[in-house]
Image 1: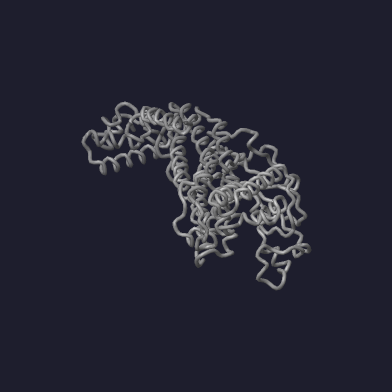
Image 2: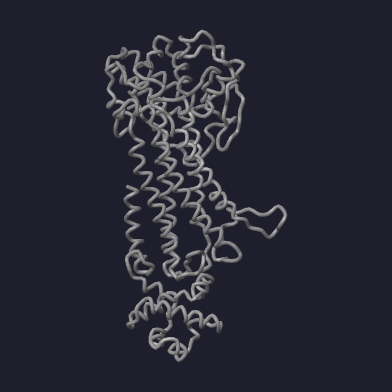
Length: 509
């Protein structure tokens, strides 16, 4: 097997850095976001011919060459490119398209290149316009041009880059799924701690009905469950191999695409070569999955920001996840959830960028598609960081149970329960709704709550109200009464937590 690619570190880091790049590089560097882009010294770029220079009478203008190069960001694909090249070379030898001894030399040479790149000893040449040509150039140095030059038989950079990009996206999709599952576990764990913690729930950010705090945690569990399912479904479409499509029409050589697909862990091979080299649906879908997950992370962050404010004060983030003010000594700023909320807009931008780039492209490959990678590279790194931070916040969040309980008893939040009791006593619901509305107004005018209402006062508002109000409806009583599937009753929450435990056991198999 030539497909072994070590699991990546889940923690997003620069693709390479000035201190420890994947190889030495005499270059101009531009820092942007999570990446440091390296552009070759354009004064030296014309010193060597390009692999495609046979048709041309003059070298490329240095400024154009610099503008055209993608080596500054696509060298993060080196592991994937080396893996697919090993599998491709082995297939060429197996099919007798090239001598087996040459295929073996190529595979060995690619292994040596990987060691150089892993160790940061690979030396990039100013003429390297992308990671694929950099690897091929070095391979020719190791094996000799007569052997190394045979690697590109029966393939094009069009199907090569599409394949390596899919492999990279597949790997990061797996990492993101694992991080979502970790966040879900943290949410379920906290829900288990707060089945009996009563809290106010809101609509329009106004107090609505009392629920166990566990119900709030599990609401986000369900959101992230859908997110994980989206990534799992997207992975099936990511995991289709374009290699073998060549430039756009396939190849004249008797290649074995199924062999290469098995070696590289693909579930299927593409069925139309023109579509295969120009398809970036998988990248757009990945960015949509990221954007939807970010939406949920941003909603969670917004609530944590609100609930940890002095005005609410029912939750508190750990000190080491917050910052202070440069002028106001008393401040404790929730920077982590604010950054998650802010980065969500950045991720939406990547999705729009991808869709806009693709919307007018004719078949098959166009150079516009070089713009497909940076949005995905950045989105993956940001998503992993955001999920990691969210898990930390949830796991270490401090909850003020007493204050939540006090808040859950105010605001006439058991009004629906009183209306339901009127209905159970024989009143139509619309009538009951109006009666309880009058009851709330009566209490507001007298600055009392339901518990302070005298039976005779209730009876004056409506004859059935005295019976409906008999026995105060507590906040917990209200929650216990919602004993329907998906409802806020503690019994239902415990049943859901039990089912979640079984779900998580399946993930970990």
